[in-house]
Image (cartoon, rainbow, N blue to C red; front, side, top):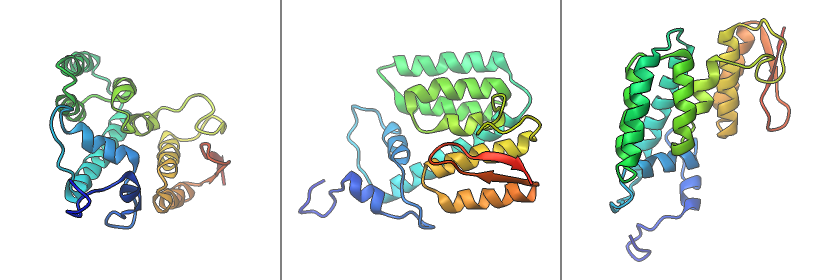
Length: 201
């Protein structure tokens, strides 16, 4: 990589280059790309590779969100996956192997609290945005912005997903989810950069 060869890129280039559809790459997209390689291996950055990484991260987030909405937990499976992830990290920070365990988890049938717990633990290491999606199906009392109890889980999940899209700068996607929330009979109002507040129409 060199400036004279025209293949030198900066983080500003990453943020300025639009993806197909117009959305820019996020820092988490680039981090995910880096995690697909071992730290001791040279990285041949390409825009095609970055796009593939961004798509893989998006699929992973969506898969964890759906897993968190399932009622089953499969704690015994989660325990085995947790041990496998730790083994990968202990293997000279083998992040590609650790990512493979994360993808394996969403294919293993875990759900509910087990999915949310694994996402929270693993994202402390990976920092690629798993938790915001995986936590969508389980709001604390009062919901995502202090709304009253009784809001359907599906609507709360849409609101949490919308919050995550807003935090990533995907305002078009957030607006689309606002429409789905309205169709379900609820309004969502934004208060600064914090989570949206739900109320019945």
